[in-house]
Image (cartoon, rainbow, N blue to C red; front, side, top):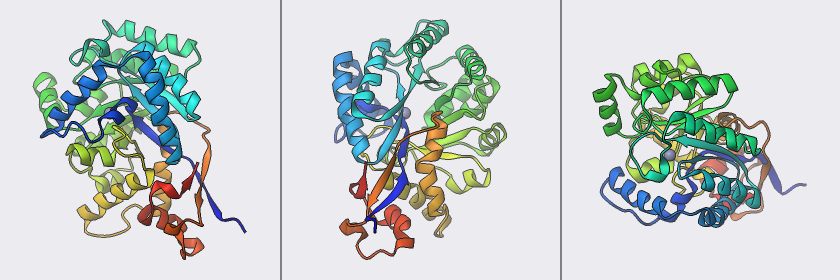
Length: 336
Ligand SMILES: [Zn+2]
């Protein structure tokens, strides 16, 4: 009799490992005040600091049941290499989603041109890193950059991740500049396809959801971070009606617990729909694992086990274990 229940490893498809340092800090009034605190931490990063602190965060992720991570990286090329090394040392599978940043933010975020950015991507690929493309957002990337990055992703068969529709202000700015909304701009510039993941999509409207559904693009929801930052509620049921794939991200890493991310996701959906079982448990677990692996372009990643001897699972029938995990347990029941 085994006292362990095997599970696929969880996958956080969207992480900014350095933001783990902000937990408990940056308690300003809104997202933009938090962003100021984030920029301060980002400013002080060094390759050596990344190598050490990312390894600690990745070890915590591993202990929480995440066996793969999509690191959305916008703090410099030497630091990207350090992140890859940190993941290797921590024993977590990593896909480096290298961010393109054309304007705004800090000096260290930006490349001088889109060709400089693609050169960095090529350099990491040549060094053997698993890489995905990550135009940071429509705020940080002009339309011309998006077009070129979309073309490169298509030609090279690479995944493309981009933040969109997290905050109303970003949508207003996009409307003012382009007269269309962020996901509409991503469609127009050739950035939507089956290997595209929209990070957040919190305020996506009906037309934007239709564009995602038509193109086969998915959404990475980051429930604990979105709650922490006051982003809003993802329209979960509408996304499912459109058949848009979902995966999860630990994003700011304020909390590392895939079960809690999934519980929050289903909790949002239940409160909005005034009913239970909006996303059935097997699908929730697959959103937390296989869907994330697919979103970051990974075919293989290690499995984990749940400890059936843990007090949180005591007395739970075999057939109810997975539901008990999602609704009644924390990541401490998971054995990596
Ligand atoms: Zn992010």
